Image 1: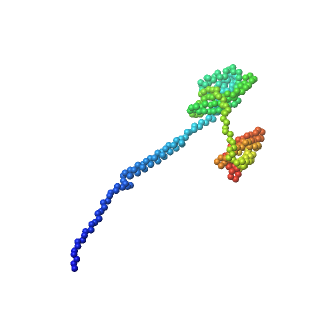
Image 2: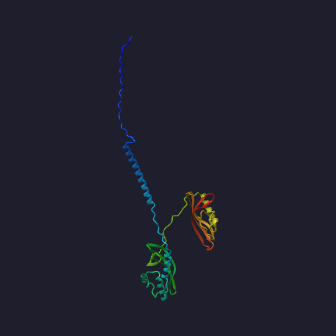
Image 3: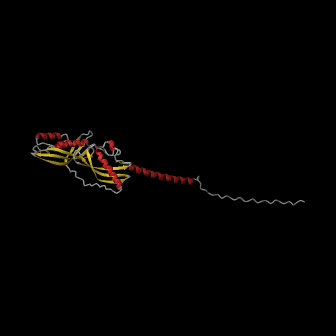
Length: 303
């Protein structure tokens, strides 16, 4: 039996979903690339400015002022010779003329004329220089120097003699060959006086224990008793790297006067006055030392 023919029903196909386009910002986009360039550039500029500032500061710190060292030996010798001739005279015509002749070796022609009447022909005194002290030599301008000095004279009039001490300042010129000439006459100046400076007194601060202080004291007493006559080999037992020189003198140790001890940077510092008897002069010699000591097996003076 034949079945009736059926048409096949068409199956409906599912509709395709339309894709939605999404904008993405990726590494290859020009805008992102430009942002990265700007960021890296800013960072690099900041680092550059930072290092530039450090370099400029370093250059400032390394600025060195060169010192100008002047050898004043010739000036001092010239001054001493001049002072001897200038402040010495006899009340004798020939001697006075000889003095004026000697002064031509030191003074400009103008100063020679100025000093002609310094010592009159009828002067009743004679003078000899006893001592000369040069206190300072200062460079005033290029090749021009001022010298401050004191001179002690013995002044004799008839049978009487007395001593006088005066201080003067004069100006000299030194040429490129080292030759010297006085350009300003000796002028009265102030005598150097004792300064009112008082150094700070060092005191024990309790950083060194009493046992250690006693050990160091015994070590120093032993050392200074042998120090005056110690050889370099003997000194090496107590002293490191020639911290103290050999003296080889006939001194007899007496005592340590008021030693002071402090602990600094794991070292012991000692301030001590050493009392000696000088067997040659029979006088007492008081020597002051500031020492740095260390202990490994034994105590040693290291500085």
